[in-house]
Image (cartoon, rainbow, N blue to C red; front, side):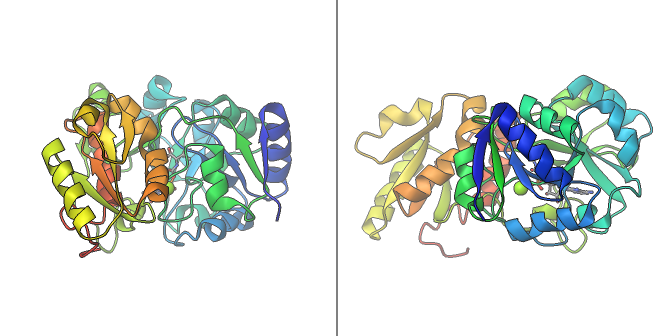
Length: 333
Ligand code: TXA
Ligand code: MG
């Protein structure tokens, strides 16, 4: 199959036609690119799992164009509407009880549904011109999420008919997922919207940190994620970075450092990719740095962000992508 890359109106018009015909289309959002299908069409949504190689038990997020559409697809006791009126369009996904209009292929048999309203003009236009879109990130399963049309093309060339090119994703990591199905709201996946941002709306908010076993609350968490093709180790300091680099050379490896901007000057002569000068820049560049890094060498040494908020969310992704924090030859993968 030929995979077209189109921008603007041309992309949206063809994209909407394809979605209404039961095909799948990659589209930009403010977080990462999504791979969308009509959320009410069971056979269309199954094509997403096939193109990504995604396990069938990992449910999809449904993307809507407006807060008023929540009631079409799930049951809200008012908490979701209040939250989304504050944060949507934006990088916050809420989980609610689902309505029957959404087939079980979308929710992997669960009676709950994840919904969000993406803050990207192309995404909103595509949804408005077609259907609510069930969409995971547009990467092959286990790979880093794509933050540009070219990264989608790397993974999906020949597998999907269209990529709508809406430029580089502004945020760069996936939405915060908040489970509202219990009494207490629980963050299942940290993101750009932080626990601190959500606290004013509830008497308490927790971030899920349990080990993920048989029936995980966020099923996707049990799989390896966001991973570059080569080994990735996390370094806690410039001193450790230099040591890991030296050790890697001794082992005959070809290391590359994904460095924090503030440390760059300490690394004369090392192969480097600058991830950025603050949490926002590092989040935006994280996945493209993984993809650049795997091309530049065969061991990625990624520098850790300290602190809470967005830095904590970035580290959640980096830890899932890492093969090890201390064994650069891949033991313990
Ligand atoms: O920013 C984002 O959220 C991007 C863009 C494209 O919108 N989407 C995204 O989708 O990251 P995906 O499929 O890569 O990640 C969705 C996560 C998975 O870990 C999945 O298990 C979880 O959401 N999820 C979906 N529905 C759920 C549900 N009903 N209960 C618990 N977890 C759910
Ligand atoms: Mg994903």
